[in-house]
Every structure is written in C-alpha cells, then in structure tokens.
Length: 278
Image 1: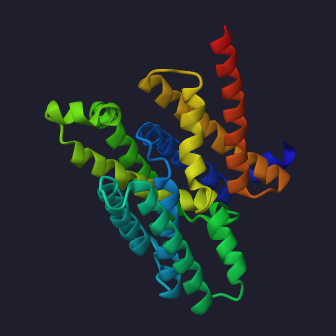
Image 2: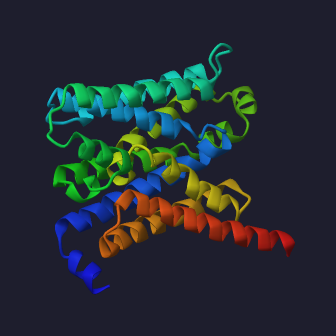
C-alpha cells in the first residue's frame, strides 16, 4: 500500500487511472448490448484491425497514429455489421477473416518495415498493453476524456432506442425506429472504444473488457437497466483495482485487469447460483 500511495504522486499513474476508469465505463455500457445481440466477438475482431492499422501508422512514422487507426477501425466495424446479415459470409466468419488477416498483416509489416530495434517488445506491448497505459501524455488523456464523454452521452441520449434495437429489432422497425441507423451507430461507437482500450489492455485482451462485466452483471440481475449499471460499476472497480495491483506487484497492467474481471465473474457466478437455489 505504501508503494501504491507513493506512485499515486506521479502524474503518469493518475493519467492511467483516469483513462482506465473512462475506458472501462464506456466498454461496459455497450458490452451489454453486444452480449445480448450475440455479437460479442466484434470487439476481438476490431482490436486486431486496430493492431494492423497501428502497424501501418508506425511504419509511416505518423505523429498521431489515431488519425489512421480510428477511421480504419470504424470502416471495418460498419463492414462487419453489414456482412452479419449476408447469406454468403455470416458475422462470425467475417469477424474471423478480418481479425486474422489484420493481425497477420500488422505483425508482418512491423517485421518487414521495422522502425524499432525491439520489434518483439513493441508487439508484446501492443497486444497485451504491458506499458502503454503508463506512458500516456496529457494530449492522450484529453482525447480519451472527450471521446468518452461523447460515447457516454450517446448512450444516455439514445438509451431507449438502443434498448429497443437490442431486444427486438423487428418490433423496433415496426415501431418506426431506424434499426439500421442505430446498429451502425453502435458499431461505430464500439470501434471508438476499441481504439481507446488498446492503451489499457492491449489488442488481444479487449474483448474481455467488453464481455466480462456484462456477463457478471447478468448473473445478478435480470433487467437491462440494472445489468447496465451493475456492469459499469464492476468494470470500473476491476479497472482501478487492476491498475493499482499491477503497480504494487509489478505485474502487466492489461493482464491484471482481465484477471480481476475474471475473478469478479466467478464470484458473481457463485452468487447467482446461490440465488437460484434460494
């Protein structure tokens, strides 16, 4: 605890906590929708797309990699949404194709056009988020704050429409709701969350940040609003505890956060079992 309090005096630790809380909150809000729509692995697929775009931006030596990563990830999110209803390539197959291709292309580009003496270290940091969350600048933090406010604002403002599209898309269309528009909006927002979350847990672990809090909350509650609120609370607690534990124990940040999410899920699972028996 003494070590943790000592580190809290450093700006980079406070930046990591701010960004961690915001990303965890955003991912948990829309994670419930993804789980209920049975499209959970879109987070995994888009994270690999973001990794490929990041590799290209690194080779091009772009000062702001977000300029390339964000639009590429958003475009792929929309494409995945459109192909999910395609009779030739279903959503899960499309995600597998895009994610594997992007991951392989990104790793290939980073090796062939290496811009660093430690390619393996750069790849590991990007995939597992080992150190990037602790090297954030003020610009990164403000960008995350602005994007997070927009994401949370969109969720609150369009809550009723998101709820309707999540549970019964056919009824939503019959009621006059433009389901395609809101599905596209959800896909775009998920892409933004994925890009932001790369700094927190890395490309390979993002899907856990999206899925675990929602599944944990579903073990305890049965209505959409309660699940969403519980998911947000659990996600923020796991993010903060994961960052603090990683600082105190010297473990990788991303892996520690995911381990905390997994532990909370097991606890919620046991509580749900006990409630069911009662």
